[in-house]
Image 1: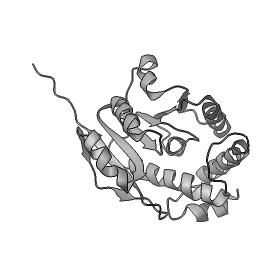
Image 2 (image 1 turned 60 degrees about the vertical axis):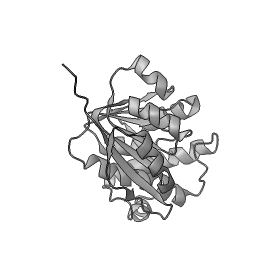
Image 3 (image 1 turned 90 degrees about the horizontal axis):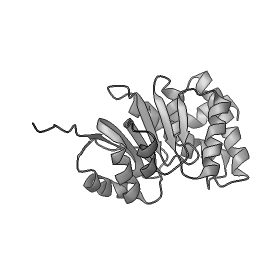
Image 4 (image 1 turned 30 degrees about the horizontal axis):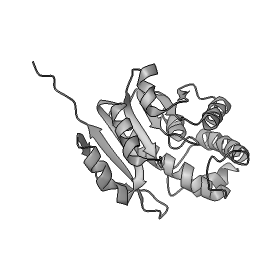
Length: 215
């Protein structure tokens, strides 16, 4: 996709430099190519793919990465076609990003995108989130989650992958906010930020409490 057209479509969400626009164009081309073979996204219109997936992800990335303290390790749980994990990785060169995706074909797609974009700060865990700690003990300073199946279970798994004092960034519908607040009782939640696009979705950010060991 032409980078000028991309820039215009993304304008309500984020302002990208030429290099990020170039990488996004490559990513979109790969997504469209793979989506003809496997179901990466139900959205088929290229312009809607830009706004719905890339726009929302870059919107979240700008805000999450602007929070105090750059996270050394970012985890994206249930990455699917890479949203918002890969756009965040494209913006966060100094952070290590792990994409957790249990479906093997989608994990293979993610690896191809990472290779095509030349991203050296991203790896893919092709397994379930609950199995991740058995392979890699390090938790995330920031964990993101968007449009995952089984929200209750996924959120419980997500909280277990987040380090004390770390942040979780949820891209959810407003109707799920109460659910998130009840389950994440050890999180301090910020006011939700409406995501542009008129789809009633918000960026909901919580900070995990730091446990004080009893002596």
